[in-house]
Image 1 (cartoon, rainbow, N blue to C red):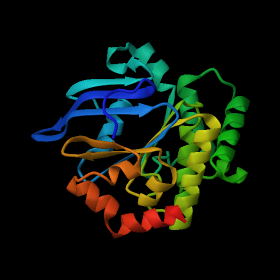
Image 2 (image 1 turned 90 degrees about the horizontal axis):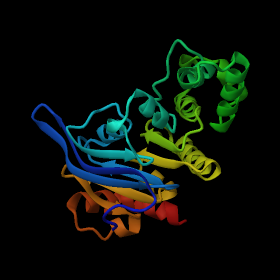
Image 3 (image 1 turned 120 degrees about the horizontal axis):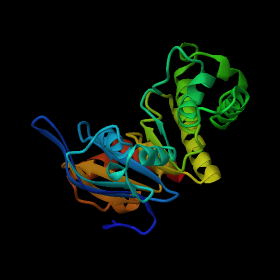
Length: 262
């Protein structure tokens, strides 16, 4: 398992501390995400997986630590500098987080309108159509409202919005949660294809063992308020940490491993 920063890191977290009241979520947490990889992030309930993501993208201000994204420290930036870095990532929040009063196409256009307010309506519509196609939705989905979509289609609509700005980084928070096995496998395949086609780096929070085996280049394990291990799954299997052993070597972990090897 690797330790220390890597020269190809596009996200570097050092000494992160997050605390809510008397509850310390992260303490001295270090993490590197390499350019072009899909990094899976796992951990038990309450280990702060989503809090870590929110810290990286600036929605949660840490109590201590340094976070560099694409070589830039957002906390050192003025508003303009922060704006420039934020254009380089897209986020799919758990549940999709779509605006219910906007169509899918209008949801996709939200970040474009924020960062590029001078774009014409025709160009905005063309970008929306392109992202609908990229996400695997049918063309007619662009005119639908979130309430008219299935759970799987909502995930893809949220993904289409995350891709609106042609990002370098893609953050996915439990993207296959609530999907049936076939839908989850198709979303995994889509994520891998987009990573390879668009040259994305993907930060992927998941509890889905099939996803970890199918598409993740490395996996980071959160426990004891920090990243206790990071590496390929076969490297993690050699760990003697109780949570890692139970998670990866339990019945569901063995089943996922068998399924991936077939």
